[in-house]
Length: 175
Image 1: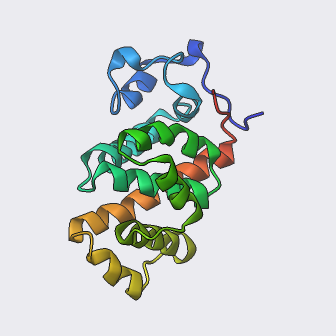
Image 2: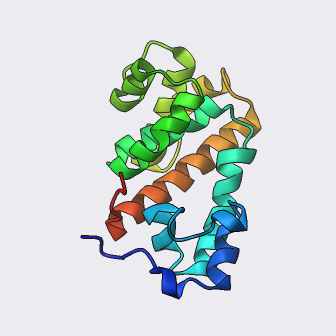
Image 3: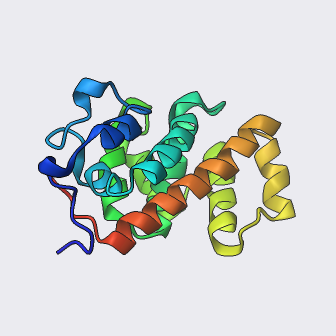
């Protein structure tokens, strides 16, 4: 059972809808359409709105190609042991072109693809030490420009935070 339950429909108000409108049209900001994670987060509408504003950049306005963003999400989900995050991003990863075999490489961290390896190593550094090592920094810059590296760091932090919240609140998967 979840530590924090999704906010029940009778408690949804204009603040909740405004918080979600950062990421979705108002007509979709309903308890029956947003899923357990967002329905739980809106228990704190101001925090949700602030987080979703940041998350929107990381997910949709980033300088990174979608397959790299989804690599970040899936690797972070693996390292933070967030099944919920992994399961909810597999469809996005597939749309971004990440095949089942590539997703398995991301999960295990074992790949012979240099750009994917550079991204995985950087994510692992950030999660393990809070900093990309000099070796991995140089390797990452062989594949990404300065802004893309910045987006990678912030995306890893964003999804690490999200995984921590999902796991701490014990949000139940609706699948």
